[in-house]
Amino acid sequence: MSKSCSAANSLALALALAACSPDPDSAAQKAADDRAVAQVEAIQKQKPPPRAINPQPILFADIQKFNLFGAGCAFAPGGSMGAVLLTRDKAAFVKLGEGMVRFAADAGSTALPFDTRSHYVGKAMSLSLTREPGETDALRWHARLIVTDTFDQPVYQADGLVECQA
Image (cartoon, rainbow, N blue to C red; front, side, top):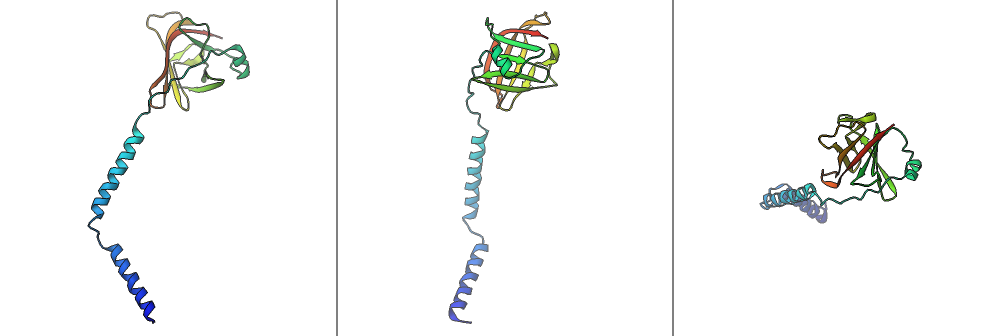
């Protein structure tokens, strides 16, 4: 075996042994790594501030465009005549900008007229429609609409009137 091969083998053996021997700084490095991981996890668990949404009135042209015909309920905020929420048996719809956001019915939530529900869930938001206490009319009542983000933070809420029809 040549001297250079013997020296290379000795160096490789020394490096391998050094890698296997306990390093006094490894405990400190592990502690630093654990702190860094904990900081990243803490940041990931923080809730970002809620980003308010501004639902637009759903017009007849929108109903035609998105084929939203059928029995269900409509919620209009305040004294407005323009509904910002349409509920159906399997889905609810809110218009944001020019697009329509679809929410799936929560079958375990309170039943409302025409097989609609009080709670619907979307990809990034969910919504709850709550009848105000004392309301007795089956097809028209005062309600509160609350839309929440994925962190369950309200991004829209309004009191208004619900009207249901077939």
